Image (tube, rainbow, N blue to C red):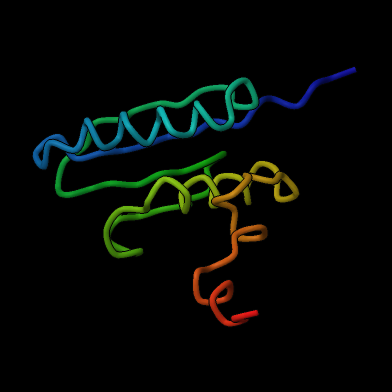
Length: 108
């Protein structure tokens, strides 16, 4: 019986822009959320303003394409959508998250 390899995350960051701490923080967020469900999280130094995050060779975030950097909740949702779309991420998950506007509509 052959087991599927665990998902891998690759965060490529620009050393010229000094985005190592941001890349490390995002790696920590993913490891804290997905833990042993990930095979590895790799930080890859680059140049030229690059900041990309891929999961299993699927590009989930590109700073230039997507306009900046994802917040932690958005990044977790994007990775979850690749590795386990049915997984519940809790209160910050878009499936279970209720916006303030929706909760304030009913004054009763």
